[in-house]
Amino acid sequence: MVAAPLDRLGAAAQLLRGVLASVRPDVDAADLTEPLNTTRARRVVRGTRAGGILAAGTLEEVFTGLGGGALPLSEDELTFLGCVLVLGPNAGGDAGEGRSTRGRLRVIAAHYVRPLARDAHGHSQRLGPAVLATWDREGSRYEHFAWGVLPEIAARLGMRGGDLDRDLHHRRDDLAGLAMAGVTGLGQVRQLIEGYRAGYGASGHGSESH
Image 1 (cartoon, rainbow, N blue to C red):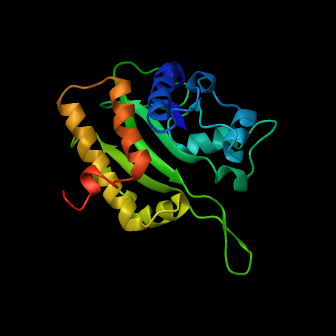
Image 2: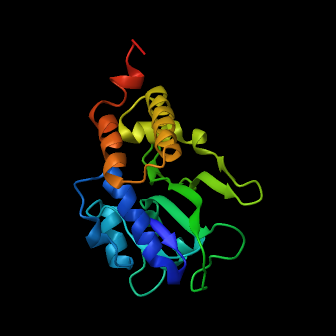
């Protein structure tokens, strides 16, 4: 899910298309670029829609927007939004909902909304969202916090924590190599990602001979 200022939803749609083309090439992202309402968001929650965009400047605004109105998502439903990327100004400014923004945008915050769980006695356990990364405008760098929830994400993906960490490490290195080489073609990025989808490091970086 990608949130952006109201007048920059086109950028949100572009980012959503890029992400889904890389990790879900089977999905027609063109059908997902209409801003989310509660009905469409409920399809995301139920797993029948791959993602969506909406006008918001923070995760709190995402929750407020989808948790209000005539047919609001419940508190339990809001825990199944998955990964929420928030687009904002590259430097300075305020990206709040409804406020006009100009210039380049970047992901200023990435959140993992942790799904509703149940304890050993069947009681509902709502865990707070986890911050995966935030953009430090003064330092012009990302502050990363995903390590705190990687074990949870690995379990949700059916992977071992160490395997997921290694996979992310290799993806980051290879994507950085493409960026340094000036490769921006989505097809080339998709080809790289598809290699990982096929084996998660079973060859190449992950082989014993390397």
